[in-house]
Length: 410
Image (cartoon, rainbow, N blue to C red; front, side):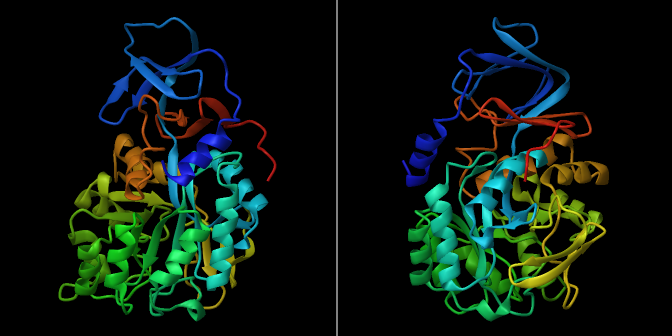
């Protein structure tokens, strides 16, 4: 058992749960291998998923009625920097917990707090803070940490601060991972950096996922890292060398190479709907992980903000750097990415849900903790309508958020 799992069990065992088994009655249940029409899903007294019963078998017990609604796994956001004025890089546990508490309003029940490029010591301090408190969060569950940088290159820096860019170092990463108590699940690097292939091979052998991004790498450089074990592309199309007919680049590698997972921001600003749809059709929903890349202005009004050390303004649903006007993360909520995909005709409801649940969970090796409705797993689930609108979020079988009710404090 990993140290993090032990922390989860020890700290989350304090959650209050009801003493009796419950059953959810709904119009549809999005199970791992089939969508069941009607029926009853058992929620055990310790807040886990139990058995599913078809409509013809009404179980004895307390039945919660959602007869016109759909029940899906809770969403898993594996790339998110901030929310409601808070940022992971603030290194403030109260702020991170506020993010956790309010993410349930976006349908997110599990997440990876995501760092930005920063100094060695700053990143180490963030790791230590999260490791100290993981399991105490009051909402969406922290399933690990995502390091976005600092091993990037300048041409496609996006909203990352280039003054911290450098070549990959296994010694540095090992010290961060030690401070994080093993919580770093994923790290993004630029394949053209010196020693990137050796770094990838070593880090992957220790169980951490390597993603490729913020890079001007050639197709061949990206392929070399994938052959060494890299398995993801960071916010595909954004912050990477583009596809052309004679130079496939990073985008070409993300679309062509087998067995990789492509992150995708579906806010309609980062990637045009037609392009997002093309990627989903080409690689399939089992290889597209919906992410938000949300920064601190998420769930906040338009105005001036900061992403790390860089000034940002938010207007018309977009966050942009004040200097250069590049997109600077997003203000997307993951629940809205599902609705967008459906409206674009890019995916069926089942495919959209898969891309926001089991695919991102599997891509980061956290699928045993989240992303699927399976017996014995934590009963983290959503109640959606037929247009994928969020009506309720449940954590460990307990109501955490209901749309239209008074929101929690920030």
